[in-house]
Image 1 (cartoon, each protein chain N blue to C red):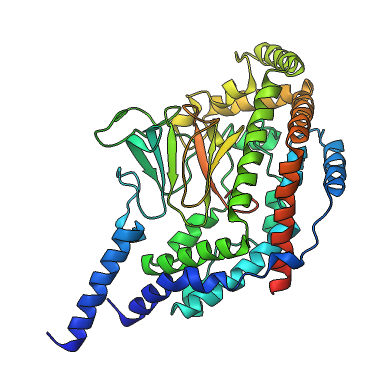
Image 2: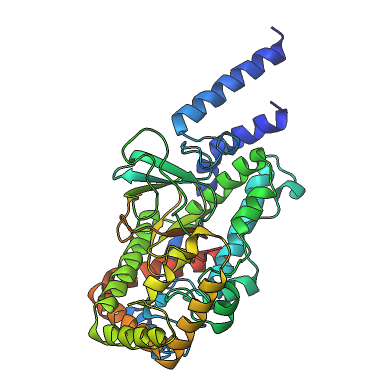
Length: 295
Length: 140
């Protein structure tokens, strides 16, 4: 065991105490009224019907961070992690790369976050990858593979404590809010699946696909066909199926119908949980404001 | 024993007790797909409450089909796909997002850093999983 490792171990042990002091007080932050949040939802949901899923927004997105908010939190967290790692004895060359995206990566990730919600929807992706998701940068794997295990011990502890510190005073509230958002998301998904308008759209899509020689009752049956998933690479048959699937999604207007119905059910569930969701949004806003003033 | 060796021995003993008390397992100790939950892994369990046979994943998976529950507990040998009841995320920073459908499609359950939970929507309906930044849950 090296002396540097001993120092790092000691610092990791005291991190929970040291980092709590770094968070700024949440009391001096303006939070939007619930009316403002309501307006934001209406604005966002008005544009939710898109020809493809690219750039799709759903009402529940009002309760997730925007790309700019993500960047503000990411930059604040990154500087905290660098300080933490330095005090744990890592030099600058041992700290990078950290798993924080650039502004462009944040923007792209937020814009495409619903791209696979209704499985493959883009003709070019279907023609190249079938139902498989195209390979994207795996920031977590890059982060792990760029560091020794000893470095990772320190960096993951620093990342974890930084997240805790940025949660300011209400880590439990943030977690409960995220869980509620997740529940609304799954609830609206299944409500849309049971909605007759979606059932009709699935029937039209299924007939279209049958005419092309493929037999599936619903889009996720085609996506989840076990024949595709025994391999990491799409077969010719998988690609042919996915191409016909996307063509039928487009010709029957499936995704605009499906996403609009899902958006409706999200809005219903959001209205049922308005107070809790607005309180969660206020916590997110406080987190962003605190990150912006901390730098 | 020299003073330095005595100091080293004392610190090693201290670290061991830290590991035992905190449950923190150094990353080096954990290989994925070995049936042991450790390091920076997501563990999926056949039964609720993190019981029964399990499987440990370090990196994202587009389809759970090829992976079986390991060990000797309930469910051992069966495919993890559509048979997981509970989860444990041992990563301190990334959220594990477990999807209803293959290839990260459809709705999902989140397992936040360093938490255990019974699966909700994806209970016995887990097809794939990805790692996401804690906020705003952008997945890699």
